[in-house]
Image 1: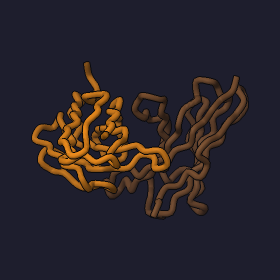
Image 2: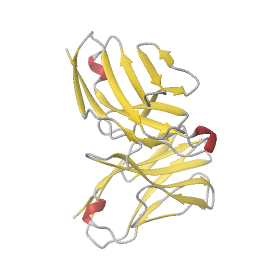
Image 3: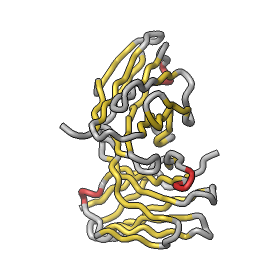
Image 4: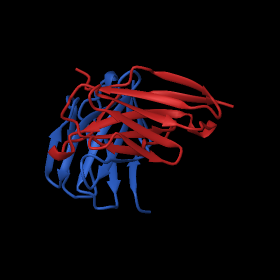
Length: 111
Length: 113
């Protein structure tokens, strides 16, 4: 189906483990984004990418790694998960950076 | 420093009445503003936008007003319906600079039947 998908939708992991959240879009949008949503903080930008092999830090990049080898995929990796990274993560894509189409989200719990 | 502020975490309105959600911004360079709506367990969805060259944009029951001198925008929903109950995020961008959106913290709207 066309659109933007995220996997897994729910994930529980332990402190110190590496975890990768996947994002895939079928629109061939140039831009892709990762946000986290936390109570009291709204949506905060972690990383974004303007095209394959081009990534930029957002507001809260520490503890996260991204890559974009293909236009349609933008995985987010937590190299050593911490409890403070428990959050809901949203991926988004767009043809331009000021209009974003969001995926359904991944709820991550770090124990 | 928060560049986009939604100072009301929640708002409760009766069905059929007007809902007014407010948003303030600090960066006078922002030239494009959007509202997103988010239901539980779903991603935010685009609702309505306005460019800084306008002061009003209307789409059905939804109208966004922009007051550049006050650095303030508002979303009006008339009439409010129970299905409008959601979290609403205000967002701003420097469109001419090709920068990503900056979001506010959101306002939870509850429309009571």
